[in-house]
Length: 445
Ligand code: 4AD
Ligand code: MG
Image (cartoon, rainbow, N blue to C red; front, top):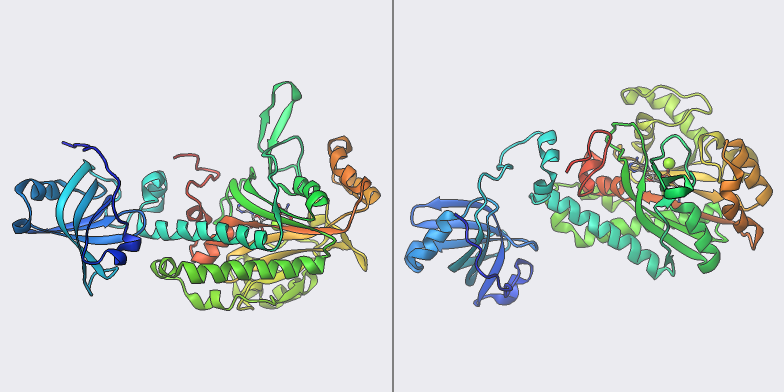
């Protein structure tokens, strides 16, 4: 039996409960858990902003109210009216002495019991799992990372410039595109990056960024890969590769700092070691791809599946782990062989077989969180690279126009939100760093 009484707005929230000490307030939310001890019922209420324990004494309330309390189950929705009392032992320092209960709905057999479930089961119930304490903490860290990233860029004079999700061409290689039919215009692809478009914005505003979902039809099942992930991509006119690295270390440090300040409780819930995050300050160590190969040759036995590499081989996850563990903060690996990277990267003038590019590797084996580069600004060289990558020049005419009309040296980068959140929150797999992950074998819920 469930009864939805006419809802009315609660008069307080858990987050601001201290301001209501000694007052009678209404808090609305969900039953996180409940314990009954005869004439006494403890209801842990989650109201969205936090948790508070409600205490229901049989002798203090009407028979009807006590029965309502008895009917409540895990995740039932209700409004509790009661007196706010300070209590040293209570989680947030306050307790609610319940006087009245409105039951919105009684949840029957909530599937996620307070016991250990396998990840597959939890992923299948992701729509409910997002209510649990650790997931709430993780997703709050995500929200803070996103807010911090955008607000920091805005404060530095960047203009947000939204880029399309349906695109006619590839920007990061043709092997991992999601395609769809687009009316009479042939094929459209889901954007792998907003970069090429954000480069158009930069010629208009100087400093821009795009932020949105990006798609990669990658058949990888690693803990770092999603098929749909969110990327924030700043792009700056007249910025060199060097400027780009400085911007990245300031950006990442500012984000980490803000999460440390504003998500202390969440990091505590996640049992995150703060010391690693506290070490995240500029300057970040840098090494070239060549140095990285030498380091791997020396340390490869320290990590499983880490084979030595020959020049021209790409770094895999074990290689990134070996490199990252030599440092206490994120590390740049710069100047990769051009052949390993996208067509638009500016070659190193001193050594044209490598690009003016860098990957930023997070500590503790979280891998690459940022990829970036200086962009080719010479129209002839860009044409040559587009052809060399087997791409159709006609598709990139608009992009080439950016080099025909007022071309300038410029640089930018893209940070994957989920990789960054997984690292900051210290969660093993990126799938928990987004509300509804899309992966090779997951499209539900
Ligand atoms: O290195 P990537 O492919 O770079 C670009 O897309 C550039 N256009 C960015 C730019 O310069 N504007 O991707 C950038 C970042 C990676 O470092 C990683 O954090 C994230 O995007 N990323 C993924 N995250 C989750 N799942 C995947 N499959 C990802 N692929 C890339
Ligand atoms: Mg990359």
